[in-house]
Length: 392
Figure 1 (cartoon, rainbow, N blue to C red):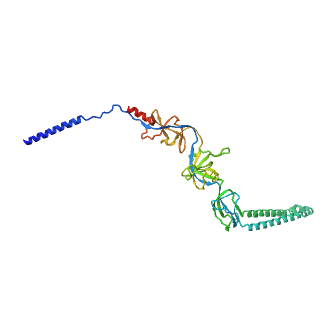
Figure 2: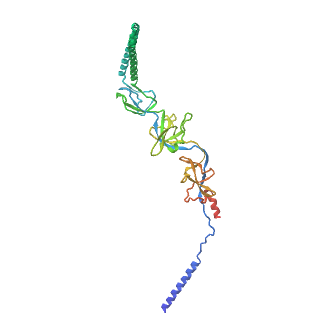
């Protein structure tokens, strides 16, 4: 009996549990789906291009080199007996300044000997001129047969020519001796910066020995490497026109420091691997009187900004917005258009568009994850208004 009652109790509990569970699930709230949905357009920012005439810039790099660079050498041999205190590496010397002197004694003696030789030759010429009168008298007394065969000898023409030649030779030797004497004094050929000195007081110098290296200070060259594709956009000087002004900077200079130069010459060679053409920019003086201008140091690296030829009636846009395949994204009628561009020129900051873009076009500057022609777009400045309308 007790077992029967237990079974009945268990059945009742199960039934009550099932009823309660059914009641709970039947009264649970159900999420309702809105019948209307809103398709969201991609949020973008846009800018407009700038139309007009522009002069883009070309960036190039290169090194500083002197326009004049010589190895000073001796043209005569001798001992250095005098040396200028300013003939030391790092010093600046003026044109015509005496840098050093060789012992002139031997060359002075040679000058005196050559002067004596000239005096002897001139005296011999005078004697020969005096003998010309006797030769003419002998010529008049000679027979016709002798006149025909020995006219030059009777008139002593060969002797006169020899005497004249001896005088000319003596003069040339004296001139050379004086020139060698002058060359014992070695001067700076131009305003220069002394790079090296290879001789000292008391050194024995032979002809051709290098005494030092001098570089001119009045003009420097910047040897730039310019992409071959940009060379035709440069304006070099002509008879009636100066080269374009170039701005030069070195990374180690202060931010506001720079030097100015002039586009000077195109060197007709191209590097094989990188396809760069070499261009010379001319800079006056190592440093001007303006103390804010940095000093140019030979061999240092510089960055150059060169104005290119002017572009007429083009649209300029920041090059960051140029897309793959020379395309650009444009928002038109709240839809995405992918435009193919005809680009006239590119510099380090902008592209200059000949065809495919107008100044009133809205260029998309936002990077999109999905790029599909005709995709819906909305401008960032209208985003708050769109949200407000949706919430209402």
